Length: 181
Image (cartoon, rainbow, N blue to C red; front, top):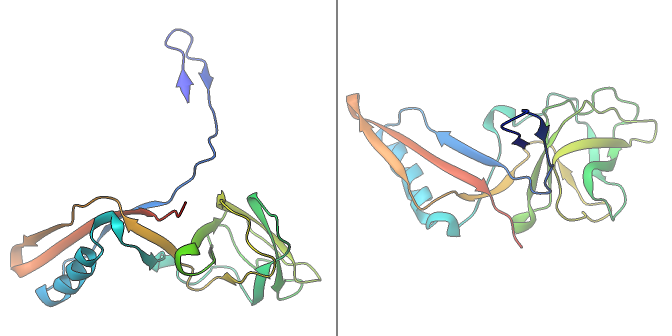
């Protein structure tokens, strides 16, 4: 977005790029628990490694999320995803804020549902999602709803921890979505 310094009129451009990023701070940890976390983080060798993770507070959808959901049709792009395999005629099959996972391994992508979705009489539902699809998922590709994970890498080479009073450790790190070219 740019703003004129004279008239304050604004122009905004929506870019194609959309990327998850997260800052993680653990609650105070005793040394044994902190060392396990630190060893894992150090084993990633900075942004070179990758790991799967989701939102621990949203591991279960708020919607009913029943059935065996899959992508319905190939060639899909943008921020809408046509799906099928849900329990038929269900209001609130997914609710705004629920996560879905597409793909596995290095092709894992995490998406958030933006609008409540209902399934129709054929078990189909169109999901408005963020971020937009970066590549077209295959027809009948599985959709994971619990837990929905994304592929991450550390945002930098820095791994931070501190020793607090009462012999507790504070551990924090930043991560960004791991995008394979």
